[in-house]
Image 1 (tube, rainbow, N blue to C red):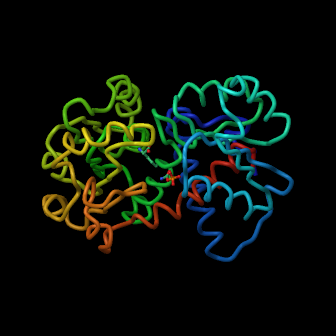
Image 2 (cartoon, rainbow, N blue to C red):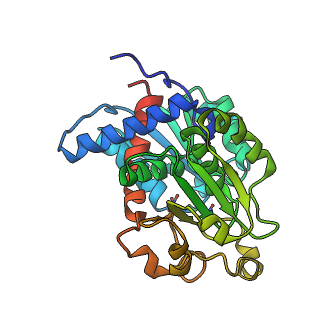
Length: 313
Ligand code: CP
Ligand code: NVA
C-alpha cells in the first residue's frame, strides 16, 4: 500500500487539507469504522504516544483521542492547563520543541488559534487542532462522516447551521466548500461568520459548486435544508457574555417549527455539549432524524483515521 500523502503533516485548519485529501480522510474514517464493526483488531499505534495539551474542558475530544490511541495499541497522554501553562508557564515554541522529543503527535485545545498555529510551526511531529476559538476541524470531519452515512452522499445537500458563526460553524463552512455541500449560517447581527473565513471558502466552493451563505433569517436557512446544526450560543471563554447572548440569540433555536420548513427527513446535528431550550429543543434531539450520538461516536473513527494518515499509515 502507498504511504499516506499526509505523513508528518499537521491539521490545524480544515483548509490544511486539499479537496482530495479531505475526501481521503472521510473515506479512511468510514473504512476504520467498518473494520471495527467487523471486529477487526489492529495495533498500528503500538509504542506511539499522542500528547493532549488542553487549555479548556472536554468530554468527547479527549476521550475519543485517548480511546483511538488505546484501540490501536498506543496511548494518549493528557496534559491539563495547570500542568503545561501553554504560553504562560512556558513559551509555545519551547513546549513544541520539548514535546516533539517525547511524543509522536500532539493534539491541542486552545483559546487563541495562534497558539495551535505556533505549536504546529515549531513541532517536528504532527499537530492537530482539538478546538481553538477560530476552528474545530476534527468535529467537522466527524460531522461530514455522519451526514454521508445517513444520506449516502454529501455533494448537493444543504447543511444549515443556526446560531453563532463560531469555531464549529467556521470548520463546517470550509468542509462543506470542499465536499460540494451547500452551507447556510443563520446568525443574528454581530454574530456572523468572519468575512475572512467566508473568503477562505471561495476557492474550493468554486471548484465543487457549493454555495456558502451567511443569512439572517432562520426560515431562509431552513428552506431546502437536509441537515440542521446547533451549537451553544456562548462558547468556552465567552461565559461572561452569556446573559447578553441569551437575549441576542432569541429565535435562533432549532425546534419542530423550523424542522417543518426543511426537506422531509432533515437530520438534526449538534456537536455537544448542548444547552437545551436555548440553541436546540431537547425533543428534536431524540427523534429518528437526530444523528447526534452518531456524530459523537464518529469523533473516534474520524480522529483514528486522521492519526493513521498523519502518522504515515
Ligand atoms: N464536541 C466536542 O468537541 O465536545 P468536547 O468539548 O466535550 O470535547
Ligand atoms: N463552540 C463551542 C464548541 C464546543 C465543542 C465552544 O467552543 O465552546
